Image 1 (tube, helix red, strand yellow):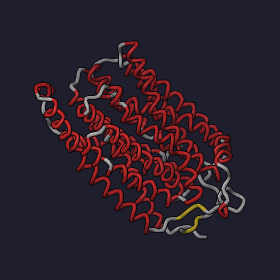
Image 2 (cartoon, one colour):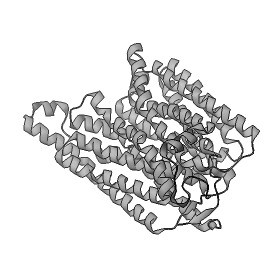
Image 3 (tube, one colour):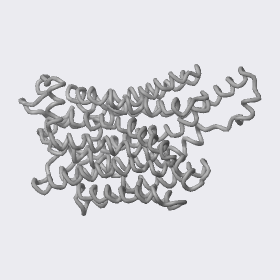
Image 4 (cartoon, one colour):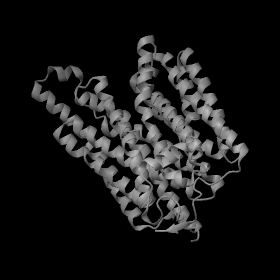
Length: 439
């Protein structure tokens, strides 16, 4: 079959880009939900941290089923299924607020994250597919740039829509138990409007994907998935894991996502401790500083890849992030905050670049390889625990940046191996298993 027309490819890429923005937006509402739900339900810090756990565990649970779904039903159907779960989870915030049950909120977040897992497992390799093979990594970074844009917008918008001004802690203490419960329930209800709108937007986009025609990678008869015959899940996983670039990308992505969550999730506590900022001022630096740095880094990195090999750029950026982590550990005042914002700028290209380099040349292993790399997002649930442990035993949140430092060195190792592979082989397409067909 012939390749899709340039116009249809651009439209498909535009639709995919909207998905990158949407899942970036909902992910970056989580730092707003954590303090909001902690107050509304009088939670401990550990209980409030279950918000992140519910999200990142879903990636670990759903990534392999997502890869199998792609192999059986294709990218388009997987994207529609992911949008469906995303929308259902968003609408579940309404009964969660009405019943004022924290477990329902966690269930809603888990369902949203299951949908996001399907979307990310499908959209990342699909974005790499739509266009010239030699520009695959640059194209994926461009799509991921809109994920970074959402990281800048979501905290600012979410704080104004969700963090309503309720009674002070002193006023709550003076209330009767029933009045206090009613006041906290009213605060929790502030999530209903934003998540209702989000859910409706998601379903509208799912309808668009239902009716548009997208190209799918055509499988050859001898490959898994041809003529409805798919290899067993264990065989597919084993074949994907045996592909060295995928295996290294899984390791690198585990540590990168862990570093990213450490930097973003603990930023407000870090800025308050190291630079003496109020929580409100620290939140502004998180949105306008880290958020803007993240999206700027994505766009700048995408442009830089026109002139610098992606693996070489990744290696340089990882080493810079490691150096800035050392600065963060031992500097003081606003220099620390500036160093962290610098880390955010340079780490912005890491997720899509690791992903694209990992599946490069994977052929029939692309779908399961994508699933394994998405599973590695579970690093965002585990490595922040190490960050918190180091902070507790050293009584210094700055010294805890030894954890991101180690993570960035792992990313540098991955980039070095990818660069060595590029020197020994000509660039190939992330998907080399045939032409495209219409579905």
